[in-house]
Length: 301
Image (tube, rainbow, N blue to C red; front, top):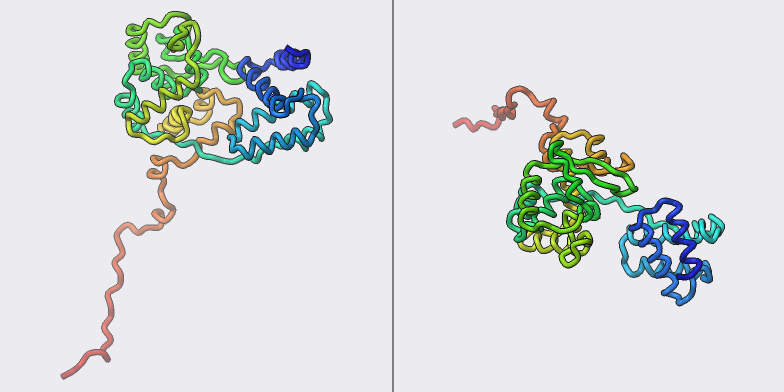
């Protein structure tokens, strides 16, 4: 390990970044160095800008590009002490695109769980993601002790932002999880361990594969990956009249604006909305006035 890499890892550790974020940032800086076959600290501003432009041209997602930008900003601004103005010019963030979460109906989810999942493990995992509104990594890292059945709650240990939180534990989900536990008896601390490494949690790629295969069997469209189950959880709570502050706490959002993104008009809400025109409607239907005959139009014989 080079001294510069070790310094970068130490800086990220002191800043309190999670292990997952550290790995993403280190890989992002390393990718820049591999691209030019030079240490990143030897690259010019123009080379850094060209590399970033290449990420856009490759069609990478905004979130992926933002991770790279954040990693490089910490590297150049905080570790190498480059001028902030230069960092802003070399590493501009892509313009934010507002997208509404795409969700599944309750009937579609029922089909997904009961028809799309052939394995009890797959059904238990996907129901956990939706039923508790979990992020993918949170579901993969669940442990048996996180299920507080007597309270009807599920504990998320060190979720995004290194924050613990509680969310709901459905009685139906608890029943399915108990059946899954009796059938599989997973070894090690993880509720959903990796197939061949019981001492390791399920990896994100395996979870996405479970979701995609279940969608195919159920005949449902892919509306943005497994994270749509979390979107569906939040939207369905909103449709049920749960207040936004409670939904924010269940989802573990740090910013209220993130939760407010679910305040789009859902199908059920649209049906309940009353048009202001209805307020002006008469109590009884108004018939159109009858045509008045023009006496001069009558033919007299």
